[in-house]
Length: 155
Image (cartoon, rainbow, N blue to C red; front, side, top):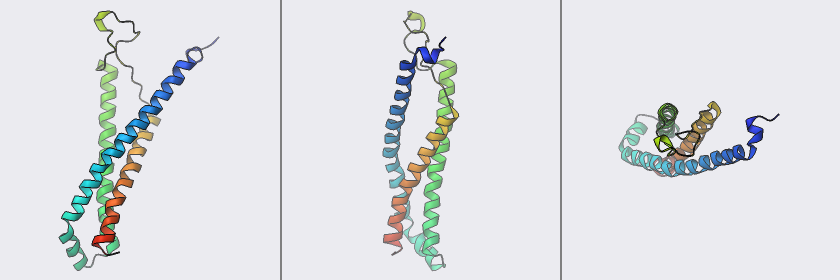
């Protein structure tokens, strides 16, 4: 006797491939969105040139100033990741309960077994997405802070 997964092995394999391709595309979108983080942090660094000079005059080391800007960028990435995961979970819950994305079945008597696009939330998927956002976000913070330490701090 075979269970549903064994009977429909090809269908479930296709769904796993679809999930992987979606993850890859959304990671590319995330990388493009990180240009906003790079731009905003670069503008913040340029805008704070006078404050950097003041901090140096007060005795702050170049390493401390670099760590301040790294912390700022990492906080932006962390807050974005947390808010994104929360909003994503809310949207998944709404889809599960109310079926925002319909498959066209509804009252028109479609050929689908379910009326709405099925959504399944797994903890491991949330962890992978959160880790990906943090890694890409932290890497995008590195470039403007490197610019700060080379150009403005004279390293």
